[in-house]
Length: 402
Ligand SMILES: *Cc1c(COP(=O)(O)O)cnc(C)c1O
Image 1 (cartoon, rainbow, N blue to C red):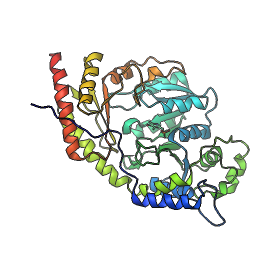
Image 2: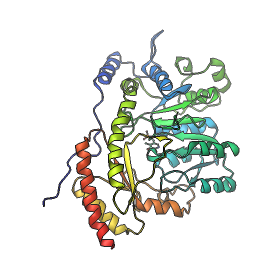
Image 3: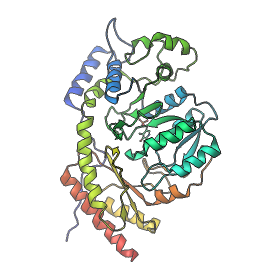
Image 4: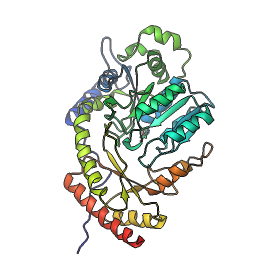
């Protein structure tokens, strides 16, 4: 029998909506691309986007930035992370997270990850005691939310300030509360592979007027903070304006204009993503030898990517062969156990710019962890072909074990 082949790229997002293209053209025609380049009485696309995102997110304030990574750096500075400050974060995350902590002079302190890809609370409690860290940057990695109520209890008991990295959870919620609304401040990304697409871009949201005023000043407001719609009173800025370095990380009106229409699609896209994600979850979790991370009932996720674990007794060779064989048939799986980062799958042993950690549990999970992007350009029929290819090649390797 001839083996089926899949021939669509795993990196192909949907086109930018028609309305967004029209809005972008209108901005281009004015030449006024800089967010503060407005005429008397005019509101910029960026200021409007911030106001609309704050409403959508149910947060009081929002600031748009050049990227998710710069949003993280500004949020860390805004809450007061200074050189040498310890910042707790999950060991299983992507490189911009420890990168942001290091960029502002902080020291990442890594917390073990469970096989459900959430924080190991026992290890967190121990590490809070030994490190005495006062900050935590949680990355809701690959859209998996930790038990947020338990986390907030632990953090408030220990007076630890929480920053949420919601790059993979825009639109997700825990027990009815939106991801990003648990900590003091939250960061989002609008980079092409996230849930809305402006090429590059990011948001900061918070309910705290001092934090948003700090963030606006840090983003490089040239004292034009009165052009923001999603901002506190002038008095808040007056207290801070000579204390915040300008980190030039402003979003521009061109990107803002293509994001505004996309906000209206987050919920419908979540449904489309989850139909695809849940198809893989239901099918793959029935295969002997595959573990699909459990998703608690309190979690409402956005399934823009899919993860599964192979058994721990699979050797590096077996996993590499499996990945190579599905790849030959057009299916792009990423392996977090690879010794060297390939694309986005960097693991904590590769971040050599801060003191290394011995994390046995996380290393074991990373060895087993396979990741797949699910672009919305894939139909359900595509998903069925992809599943068949994974299943067939998995079984060939799996049979060699027995
Ligand atoms: C993409 C991403 C970021 C940073 O976003 P950029 O917009 O690419 O800077 C941060 N954290 C996680 C987990 C991400 O996946």
